[in-house]
Amino acid sequence: MPPAPPPPPMPTPDPPAPELLRGTLDMMILRTVADEPRHGYGVVRRIEQTSGGVLGVEEGSLYPALHRLVKRGLLTAEWGTSENNRRAKFYRLTAAGRKRLKRDQTAWSAMAAAVTRVMAGGQGPTRAEGVPS
Amino acid sequence: MKDPFEKHERRRKPERARDEIDEEFAFHLDASARDARAAGLDAQSAQAKAGADFGDVSTYRDACLRVAHPWRTLMGKKQTGKWSLAATCLAIGVIAGVLIPEALDDFRSDYTPREWQRVGAFEGLVWQNDLPIVLVDNRWYVLDAINGRQIESFMEATEARFGDRTRKRFKEDLYEVLQALDEPTDAIDATLRDPVSGAVVEKPGLELTQEKRNNAYGEGWRSQPDVPPVPEVPMAGDIPAYRFFC
Image (cartoon, rainbow over all chains, first blue to last red; front, side, top):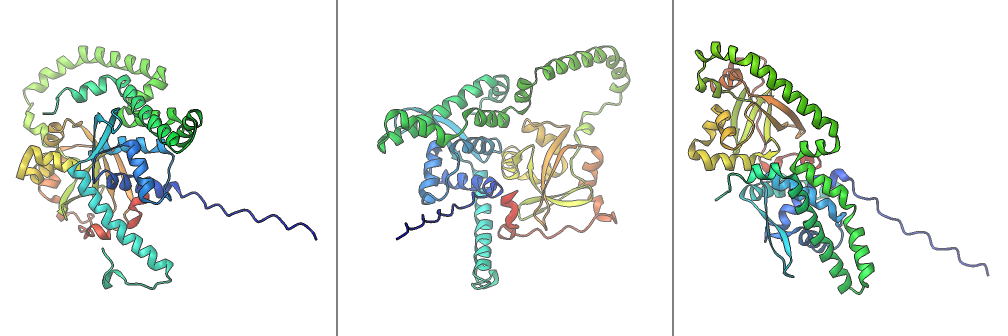
């Protein structure tokens, strides 16, 4: 009996388009520090944890985004002490950041619902029928 | 109370910014390695995993420095640029020392400080849903950011300074607002968004002029035939989704 052919390789998902991550990463960072101030490592772990491990970016790429958000006045950064008594920089949402997060969350919900409707072949409620806008 | 010299100090000491970034990264790498060890890896493997997960430290350090000190980072890489700048400053200094005093004597008699401050960057400005809609090159845009600072943050700082006169000051006395916020007053980098398509348009170096300010103040654009009517800006939930991808 001839040996069984090797199993086909598992398909690897295409990496997400960087265009998708660029804007959404800022939004996810704002959401992650909305509950409490976090250091960069805490933000990475929180995003990974809440996304069920689906969203994982190269961790260093988070820092230019954090610094950019501070410069834009949407976050503040302050040195503090970590849970392990190490000096760490903590990021906190500003009032302007909270407003921006609210706007982005609303728009994101509307877009996610719209994409879901498209992928469902046009089934599901439209905005006029109750999809959050 | 905010230290008034903090901003200046940060500008003066980019090397301190570099040290802070390195310290921040070191904390991240240590915490990551510690978690990897807790998950069962030996010390060496844990450190290697932390490094691999983080990515190239120098790339991200440079990216952070570019956010904080764009022009200094550039000069650090191109030393010739530094000397060119020094030579240009010297030349300007010489010209200024010889030519300007004479011109200044003629100018002083007509100089009215208040007039010089009545300048603006936009040819028209109206408010919708708490957002400034601005007229630039005969097109209406939502103003998203000034000099890289989100408009929410900008307006908040303006409100802290001017209270219930915020919108009026912003429309009529942008020079004063920029001055109060320690921003450059001769030109601004505006990030604009098309209210219909959502496309983001960058307008760097948008000059502040008296003509623009007067046009916005007197709403002269209303009688200009080539200016389109102010569009209805959608509420937040209707903002085109691809804003996130820009």
